[in-house]
Length: 442
Image (cartoon, rainbow, N blue to C red; front, side, top):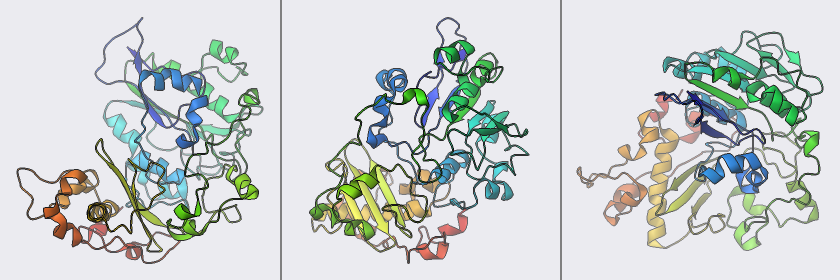
């Protein structure tokens, strides 16, 4: 049968790993096993993958690296929901307030990923953090749909050396003396022999290694493994790695790429409060090393409340662009093929070719922020100029750049956010396209 092989060293960053065939025992199955390892707030552009030996050997060196994959939103719990229910961020009614409690109360757990996979013939299992708010009070009943689920629980979810979990809704257990990534790893996939080799306490193992159990079954399986590392601890403290890694990476610093502390000429072209930031002095540089995610907590260095924007990215072999509209009515446009660090804002360019791109990107963002169902996957289907050929419809940004379509795309209203709010309010983000599209939001 197909066997899932997961790197035994460092955790893998937010990638879906299709199980690899075991040469000694291969029985072809129509449905492959799937292991999805999801890390929290790991920054690809900080070169964090470079130090992950197992990931490099098992995936990157074998040709698997998704360099053009982007998270749909920069708040971790909303990204988790997007993965679990496939609802786009513009239609997602859950925010970083409410979390699992709201998810269950709204009965969103009646129709999401494990149910879909179960119907497709998969056994579904989960180890790690599910959602914010899954806690010591609401752990029972267990989250719906999973054949086996072992959840990290609040208020200990992001306290890496105080691991509390509930297996299938059972009474929470405190794994005293263990570090979270080790507990999740052991529960998910480590054999006693490998556990000893890593110098871990192995009394935890018993029958916990889910992967060992699953590969012996005939049915295909989906196993999601979700430690919270490298998410910060207690909102502001750096994550605590296992002690055996202390001193492993001396003198390592965050990459000083061109967009790190750029010159004022570049900074002033940025939108909203970003354009007003001065060059960092030594104190400011120190603050950038605090590995905190912007989740709306007051008092943190460089954190601003009330910022809101909508962004559209188009990535192709021929060209790549990023277009953004802010609640302050600022606009950004970057040619990310020629300017990968997004330093030169082209929004005020008088070049006809640039203006042509911006018109199309605005229309595309207008549909993207309004979309439901098929229009989320096929936004160009509702952006067809009357003079487009039925034999050759507009299907890509490059298709749309024909000058004969200028008048059509110029007719679209600019994406608008009326004011900067700390809540989701449909009326604050009108207009939508197609008209009344917001009525289909979840």
